[in-house]
Amino acid sequence: MSTHRRGAFIVIEGLDRAGKSTQHARLCQNLENQGHRVKRMRFPDRTTPIGRSIDAYLKGESQQEDHVIHLLFSANRWETAASIRTAIEEGTTVVTDRYYCSGIVYSAAKGRDDLSLKWAREPEVGLPRPDLCLFLDITPEAVAKRGGFGNEKYETSAMQKRVRELFYELMQLPDGQEIKVIDAGRGIEDVERDIMERVLRMMAQTKMTEGLES
Ligand code: T5A
Ligand code: NA
Image (tube, rainbow, N blue to C red):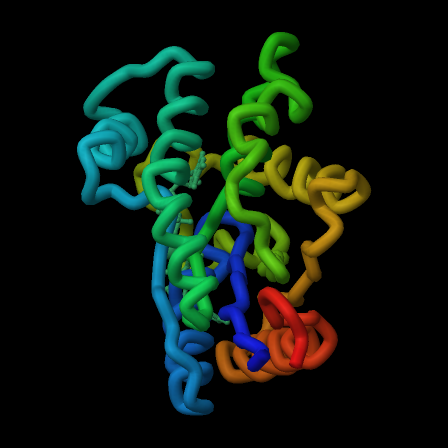
């Protein structure tokens, strides 16, 4: 019986403007250069009908009740769940730009009594779990120096401050076990090197085989 090596599932997380998309692109390229097959994904995926509703909400073109937008963000992940599982089983490494940690933390950061971290995690239960979640950490002050926030819904310093606190809270819970903090306040190449080291270490340590061992 031959062993079948499955793909890894890696998530890049962080605050708005922390450099997630920059590092996502570099990590995918670096893995491909090493011979890995890579599936690139991002959340929200603004291209689906649900994603277009989310896009309009983030741009302030439409309103949504807080629980409703939370469930739409989650549904936008569930739309892709089967394709993530298939890719991993086929040996492709899946790398996403944001995932359910953002989903849980950003909604809980609104500070409503009826939208706690505990409530916010429920719709995410059952989604494919990442092998590694890299949290690109940067202070709100350092982010502001990067050209400032754009005009989207959550891009205010009060919101970002609360989001950062909640990411650290999540890391203490069972849901946050695979989160590793990356100092994203350094130069692009330094962050890139750190991320690649973490990914290679995870790949070496994780049992990436499926089914019976030979
Ligand atoms: N959201 C998301 C939820 O509420 N629930 C959910 O379930 C999900 C999935 C949209 C919003 O939706 C929320 C979270 C968000 O508020 P998004 O589309 O991912 O999420 O938007 P942003 O996170 O805001 O993405 P940005 O594109 O603004 O930020 P990135 O990707 O972190 O940053 P990046 O790589 O584009 O870089 C930003 C700038 O900084 C420079 C880049 O060149 C660029 O100009 N830069 C650096 N400069 C100096 N040093 C470095 N090391 C740098 N790295 C990048
Ligand atoms: Na981005």
